[in-house]
Image 1 (tube, rainbow, N blue to C red):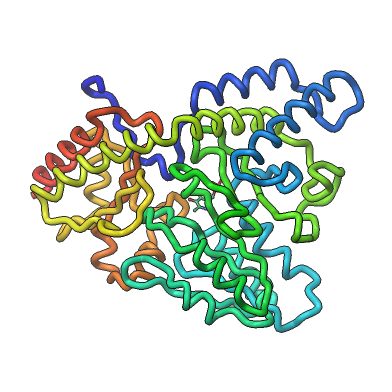
Image 2 (cartoon, protein in one colour):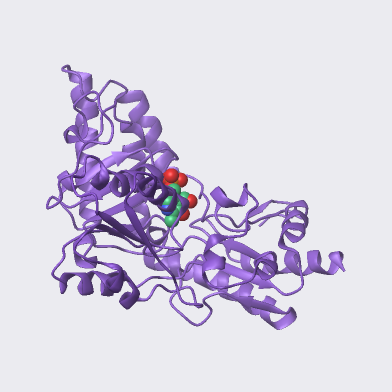
Length: 382
Ligand SMILES: Cc1ncc(COP(=O)(O)O)c(C=O)c1O
């Protein structure tokens, strides 16, 4: 890394577009700009790119192409799957089960469901940030329409027992839809949705080196839901609107590169994160969340004892290191993180946490360099 170059460690909020994704976007926009729903040669070209990309993406997740619908991002996919089972639901007692540590896209959708008069059961996590399978299974009953549990948390990186929950759900007499927000998990995990036992999933392009404003909803062909957007007949009539074919082609290219390099990329990210955490642990009074449990390779959520994280974040920014206090959606609001609150961490302590997140283009030495900046900033704050 060149001296004075800004070090970006906020990949969990958004990671830069990969070159292959950028090229695929440009190429499609130039050569296949036509509306993919039209009836002429250029439309057919766009449609072919769209369907080839869908096949490719479906293959990466072990599902059928018709189980993939393109959305504007993870938020839309989460909104769709959480809300739709409650539209025109004849059962006034229908219920939703989700957890206290979900992303705002799920939690705000759950609030909307509640505002319609339906019951929402929010399952807590334990103080290590893990949702316990038994708690989820106990919250489910014959009225449960949908269970939504994220595969890994975006603020802590802590991995949740989604496969175990799906196995538990299968053993019950009730058969709710099982949705998982895998937006953050997919950045460093290879996933097979059927094997994971979920019927629906939300994915976002800009977390894996694709563009912003494009996402995927996986919906198992076993599940039938009303359309989310009404208008044209695009996307098997599930989501009306001219499809963002360039975004889809670009996401598909990003996914190819990401999946091909996953093992070496994860190792590289992990090395940097480990060096970063080790240096800080040896010199400062810190706690790394999820230090001894399964955690996504790229995320490091750290408590700096006795330090105000807002002040530290500003100081790091001035010294050329970009990090965040948690979810980008929540940090603007300056509210204490609902995820850390769910882990029974007090507001005072929450205000001493920062999230550092590495990404596909993190380089050797970034971990050491970041640790040096953190230590210099803390020294300067004394
Ligand atoms: C876990 C999780 N779910 C959903 C989203 C929302 O995705 P998008 O930005 O594509 O709407 C994010 C983005 O921060 C996320 O981390």
